[in-house]
Length: 215
Image 1: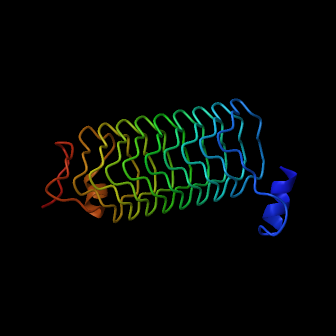
Image 2: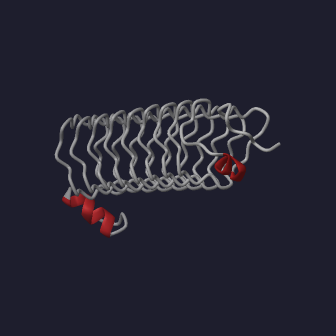
């Protein structure tokens, strides 16, 4: 770890980048560690204690982070493609501009997390908790968020076209400019005509019967 810090501080001129690829670290205590730009590809970090960890720009492709505790973790611009985050506790985590293609966020706790401009094409997040999360300009086409909690979430200019949003809780979410073309919001709880009026919808958007698009 010390050599990795030297590598970071010298901008790669000295020390050595941490290589934890394929490492077996279930339940590891990594709270507050600085692993910026580290290689953690295919690492097993299930149930690890990772509160306040810095993984900005780290390579976590294919890693297993199921049920990891990542409160206020920094994953800004991290590569999380194919990562399993099932049940992970990521409250207030920073995931700005993170790559999450093919990741699994089912039942993850992302309350008040910052996912601005992150990329999540096709990502599954059934029953995830995204209460008050910042999803501004997120790229999440064809995602599966059935039964997720999006109450109070910021979804300004979010790209959610063709998403499955059945039975989501979405009261108070800011949908200004959100692309919901082709999205399925049947059973959405707390969704108002005012919210839909500020979003982009088309003839293929499925809404609860009580909601009118005003067309």
